[in-house]
Image (cartoon, rainbow over all chains, first blue to last red; front, side):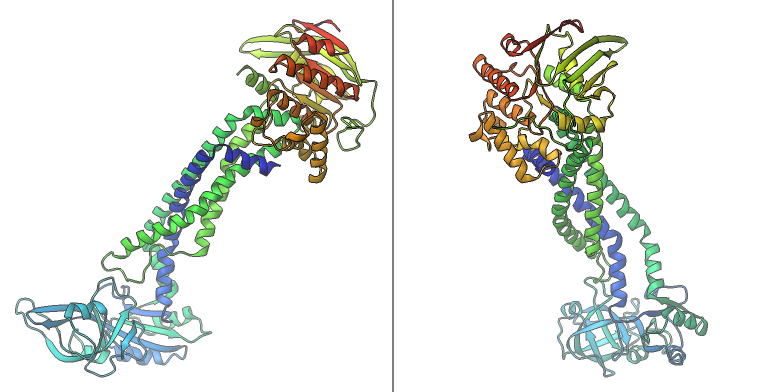
Length: 395
Length: 241
């Protein structure tokens, strides 16, 4: 009967209830987006780091991978040292540089990675083949579009461009063997990959035995942190970053972002709470006579409280359910805008939907709905019966 | 025959009927209006026997409704005591008074006060649901009571689809739902035309004849005249009991 009465009370002013539900849906959508954003970038970054199974990365001392142009010297020596540890099963050295491709009267500039194609973890091959040969190069769609080339074409690839003399340090003819997608590449970024030894020989960097980054896989069952500490001791001129330490650094860098999300999420929740409290309080004020009669007939205070809290929870939960869909749509739209920021990896999502985000938002709104019902329900339950009936009769 | 009153044995119900179902002793009720104290009841003493039909009459503001509220355990006296079925309802805490009202007191109000969103049968079932009666039992009892008040064919109608007289009859059926010891009515014909009021008066007469103890506050001479006994009030005191 309490549910019947609560439902009837909500239906009595259907339009008003619907508007309140829509208001809660908007607040819920914002809350969901903020919950998604608070954890989304971190989770997306974690997925990105682990996408190819590399758990440890070595960067030049004091830097993050590709944070600067700094490189690690004696790459071959480092590889030998790392191979001496049986816990490390895959070593993928990477050298980053810039290449220039003359196309008619213009020069197309692109990022390039020198990799060991068999163990690389920087790109996915979409068509063609890996750049196994010394004169092979794999490129992304943006590069193909900018240069007007296709798989099988031969292009001139140059490094060490001097803008004053308009000359190149070294160049060579290369064949495009594969079309690839770079996992860590930014949106619209032109990128290519070739053998590490080829790029080193082309003199893109000062030394022919440099690398920008080493990516490592640790044997299953081995402790990653133990391996990380071993590398730090064995190779002191590098910064060793495990996925856990990388995430800690990302956490530190994203803390302002998360604080913003928490504040906006809290504001949304509070707006939803106030909306429901206001609506239910107005609804209770309109039927104090009915409530006083129910009390006179012997309906307990507890049952009055339950009925009114139920009304608040229904508005909150239905609003939250609607807000879930709205939140996903707005998150997708906002993600599209934010992901097009220059320099950000394409694979990073600002708003990552995870079921626990939806459950968190729904849970918070349900708790908020219960809280929103408490004030009007206690107000209703503590109405003085005789006085209220007398005032109603006079009114 | 429809039973409008029986001796149930559930919690809160008066177990052993007494001759005096209501005993009011030196009953007083003051209200504070700012710094001023208004003495709505100034020490009222009377008894009402089981099965009686009492009309409380008097001019407006003489304390009739205040007295009815105290008898109905929805207000507490400033002084004195009111005992219903041997239990001092003026001393009860809210929870106890609520349970007592549910099972022992039936209320009929001038403005009917039906739940506008519920049908006639749902309105009658409301106190039974609160008392924990099973759904089938509630429905059967509601049918029985609505038939008793002459609304067997209006069970699914909402209050807005009923006339004033019909609404008051639904309210009377609701007041009888849990077999109350006494039925309290505050100006039950106050919002009805003469013919409809006469129907309600006849219904009250039938209820009393079937064993219900009735206490009615009224300005309606016909209703007061139908009662077996009148209590006259003036300025918070009984003039003639």
